[in-house]
Amino acid sequence: DAGITQSPRYKITETGRQVTLMCHQTWSHSYMFWYRQDLGHGLRLIYYSAAADITDKGEVPDGYVVSRSKTENFPLTLESATRSQTSVYFCASSEVPQGAGGYTFGSGTRLTVV
Amino acid sequence: GENVEQHPSTLSVQEGDSAVIKCTYSDSASNYFPWYKQELGKRPQLIIDIRSNVGEKKDQRIAVTLNKTAKHFSLHITETQPEDSAVYFCAASTATGNQFYFGTGTSLTVIP
Image 1 (cartoon, chains in turn green, red):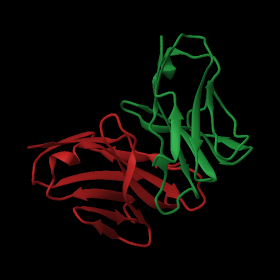
Image 2 (spheres, one colour):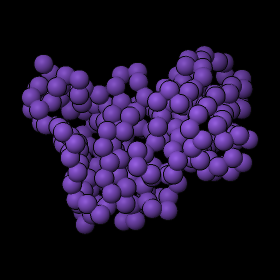
Image 3 (spheres, helix red, strand yellow):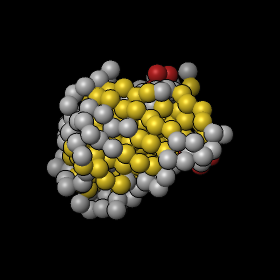
């Protein structure tokens, strides 16, 4: 599980600021995902990527930007943070979308927007 | 897209009793159903999964059943222990889909 790491673990930022959450995996998995976790909503997909330079929107993409110039990295940027983006963010990866073993999640980033 | 509903949202059981968590899905094309366990402050981790070509799968004290006709699947934990206390998520995915659709989670508490 140490093969997928997120940074920072905790972040406090002010409304309107840009913030980037980092995700790095060492398995060369093709697929990477960003989820946010909120009480009562479970895990909701923000963006995903099937390969380097290929990204697609999930269920809740507004206010977020992603890029994937290298297979191992999948940063998530909040262009202008809002209080509604206070959440726990999980990055995940998998070799195939529903291959044996499902997703492997990172440890999460707890983001607070004040 | 797919809609996954999960019940109950909270569940308390006495140690040694069984726990059952149920999920329904809407897309008949869904054919892969993983279950994740998330302990407090930790990442979700896969505990068991099932594909639509089987009706039941067991792994020691946990089992998952699938009813394709009714479009629901369930997680069964027998002989519960305090370390089973966690939030459990179900999910569904189609063969051509690129993502999992998660339920809203069940917070299970096992009372010693």
